[in-house]
Image (cartoon, rainbow over all chains, first blue to last red; front, side, top):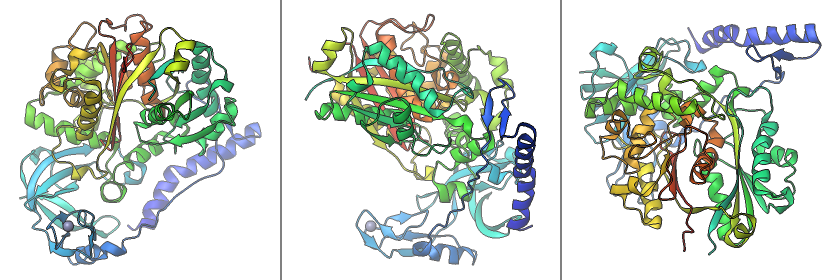
Length: 180
Length: 395
Ligand SMILES: [Zn+2]
């Protein structure tokens, strides 16, 4: 299932109902005005819609995505002060050096903490409840990702590994944490 | 430089305010503050609007509010510091008076979150961390961010669910006496334990609600304050710091580091000893967007040792009569958390406490004449700690 199909399904579930409701309101009261269910207060239902989809520049760290598609997780390292950056960035703003070195991360670490998201944002509604964790890698940096394990198998302090996977049902590359 | 005093306070009813729009809601607080201080709009040199924005239809809220509240053409701006927006607005007005640019300044905080449907609100709050690396890819929600702290602390310090429940029970208890609070119903431990999980281990009763509300303050220079009122409440100091957007860039998940740094800054100016901080204050407001946040606040403010915040809750030391009463207006948990209004509301609560004007059943004993407000933005993105006193700071 691709983005189109997922979006359409969500659109049908949420937006379509609202639009039909606005049509009905206008038909009945000649204006897009509804009554609050609890208080009966009149509410004007916005007939203008704002949807946003951002275009986020990733040129400076494109090497991360290039490597990810090859199954590797990289960070960047400052040749001057040795700082390791994850999420990767191409500027060491401590010593004002740009064009940092690429280092492949071990992906091995320890789970610092986790949570299970049961009340999900709209744009994540099509997933099952997911576990988000933060692990500290050997390199001393932290990484946040979904933990793809059963809840009862997860403990703070357990050894984990970063895995490159496809995010389904959309099918694009991302990374997750797995128990070692 | 002049000292700065609070000479007027205003507070709307917090809740699901579908009976008013954003500017009408704001007017409730503005009108109250003007009446309390016996001032007219023409006396206000400048007004600062704390409004995180994005929830309601008006995007240039300061202007819409200025027009409706008859404050134009005085100079204004909208200020944003996430959930600490109200404290940031206070800071701007405070600085304007300190610098001699204004003699009387109004601080307005407002948010009307119910203009956005609930699922959109969940989405918007989740996007308030680091957008790309933490939301776009992994869908963290706002309770999720704080849940990561709770899980870590349970594993590390033996904190229990019931310890978090103590915070919820206390704040609902005091909220039941506060006529401005969104929730005025007390809760019991079994209701807390049974409430629905939103982000393990946090439940509905660990979380503050989505709220509409407004609050206002009128600040004045020393010279003007003395003419207006014989009961000014002085702003002694304010510490403010910033943290990382990426939650994963925090060191350990047991403390909101920026809040501790902000407290240290405020304490230094006020000559408060961090390790015995609770001895200096009669009452405190702590940012309890989630119960776990209040527990960490106890430690970040020096009211409890690191790792022992939950014990302070377990021993009920933060009720009136305990070591230090915290959030006796119901806190964000029961009073509600209209993002931009929260910091201003905290200042209103402390001012009214110090002046013995708190709601019946919520008044703390005022012996030292000092109160403190701890206001965190995001999940430790911003922190503002403000100290208030009945005594003029430079006296
Ligand atoms: Zn460097």
